[in-house]
Image 1 (cartoon, one colour):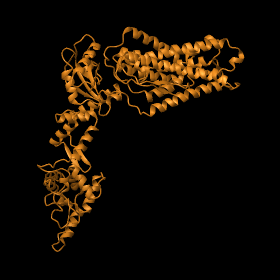
Image 2 (tube, helix red, strand yellow):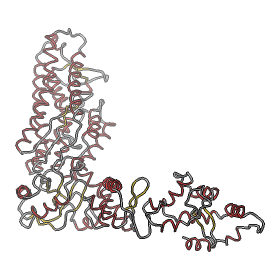
Image 3 (tube, helix red, strand yellow):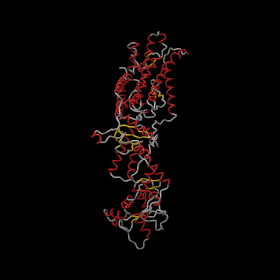
Image 4 (cartoon, one colour):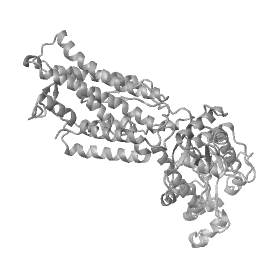
Length: 619
């Protein structure tokens, strides 16, 4: 330390030229010492202070009651005022006081910092308690080791990987990583617990930056349910899967398992004809292995960020084996879903009563309620039940699990649809497509039949009976070109012309239920998040392009809300809801390499056109 300070002071004027102390043989030695403190070059003391290790700086600040102070100049000035620093006999030498300020007579009061850092760990010096010594290091306590493990496990995955690689350990084995870091003196105790001592050059920092970018990309591609706490398979389980399940006859690995958020990927080559056959072979081998039931394998396209080399050589998004924990069911508070479903039911009832009581000259009696309100409520509910039943039938047929639906309320139509979570991976994209499209198509078919039936009955009603019918705002009916076209086709051209935004049109309860069903099922088909439309886009375009489709769709909806005649903003409200509640990507299928077949692709195009007709407002 003194040598460093000498080099620093040689670049400055001699301290003797800055200190002019009157020599008086009769003066008191304490007054001379005081004069030295007052005249000490602050820059010299500051240079010595900043060269100290951070733990030593913290201890010095604590002794002068400035533990939170970051201004070095202020700290040095207080050290000078409290006689905690002095000039040594050497030119530019500085010593910091490490003892109790009330022990000025003690010879150890002004021991140099170097002496403290070289002192035995068994001594009572504060630095020894911080874990610093010359050749010996004290043993870490169990509490400190556990603190280090907890600190390590809360780090981002790229940082964990870098630290584990630095000690030649597997990042998933926290205890072993910490043991190796202690052996390599990469962990130091401090007053709050422990701190990591990690060094890296610019290349290391670049690697960490790239790793964190890749980590974020993977998180955006896969749902949070694949990254549940304590669900990532241990290294020994993945190693057993690697050696016992994979091989030259199924999937020949070309690299060791690579860590990604929530699991691992394994690069290699498929040795079977199709990837469906590959997954069947892997699952059969897994059942016979020592790790059966301990992980979930998939074959997907590489979910990591595309590198420049991969882009130039067209080797990005190659098929890889991904391994996650067995439980990938989306987490939901057990009280939230029933509560939202209850609000959804109340919303349907409130909407039905509102449209029925909007008729001013109606006389409320039990017969009117039975003929108007009950058919409307029951038709809306039964249409949604058929929608959800179709989902469950496909899930049962293809042997994967779908959770109970959550009814989502709506301000405009009483019902926005339902959220039906997929709890276990579907076999492939064909299965996911069937699951996603079955519900909305069944719902739309039933809704069209209800609307046609209701409008057909209304055509043959007399004027008195029609005056008792419920009413919908004309602007709401015009929000769907498809539904509005049916109304004008059966009730006559011009019935939806309105002069004000408050104009109403009387419709049969079945027609209103059909209109609500057309709107809600069509909105569910929009390719946003993990809605039914988002699942269809995923199965048709894959994960990367489906993200682009979602972004483009949201952009079109937001822009069109300012220019297209959707006065009630049905599309915009649904998009906001989907971005909040259904933003997360869908869980992975077991086989995400092979796309849907041609027949399903044609059905997807037809469904897209139908959805556009159903959600684009009437000009």
